[in-house]
Image 1 (spheres, helix red, strand yellow):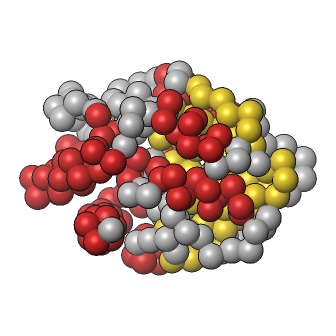
Image 2 (cartoon, one colour; image 1 turned 30 degrees about the vertical axis):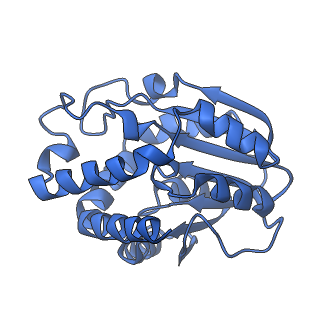
Length: 241
């Protein structure tokens, strides 16, 4: 237990160092063509003709929150890294998008049961030390019939050396940051089973139903090997409360 809590501290320290670069990258993603690619994925599952109350888990600097708030939904975004939340709040004010950003542990969000119509997440669940507990708590947050839309990958089993475009964000990471990232994966790997099959099992055990996995979503999002490119094939997993 203590090791896992230390891991959370390591992750918070890692992401604190990446806030400025990460925020700039996400803003370029928001203002460019990637915006519509991500929205096309959400439009498969979320109605856009009336506002939903949505929780963005592990929001980072608010990318998903801003996408969905711009379409009229009521967004709350949470993240464990305080500097990420501070940046998200600044960006939200600058963009005029009313998102409620809070510093909070995504494994145990502090909201009343049945608060949200939908939960969304991107590249979060691979780094949660207690994923079974997280999925169970997320189920309770949803109204009956509410939906979870999670985009992630089996990052703990990705190849260490992957060819990246010269302008890719990870090209600018120092050796210390790369080492810290690999260390986090090494610590998490023994606690996880291959994904997303493991996620589907956990979600069903937590009370979710109609769990579906799309392992091809990364091909639709990352069509070019540019600065946004993710070389690790990621999946979407959708489940209903």
